Length: 71
Image (cartoon, rainbow, N blue to C red):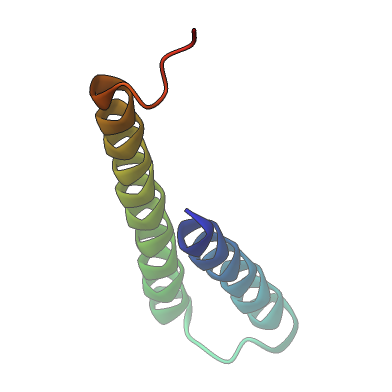
């Protein structure tokens, strides 16, 4: 799960850095900037969904096997 959090933080910070650099220096046209930001946002959403599903699967598997039952 730590990998998912790390990747999510990196993508979020990357999006912020890209936005600030576009605001101050405008290295891209607005169309290209929008495409780059949407790509980063899509990658962030995919990361969150995939690692959420993996976590839920592991928790469900542990519960069904009896490892996480409270006594």
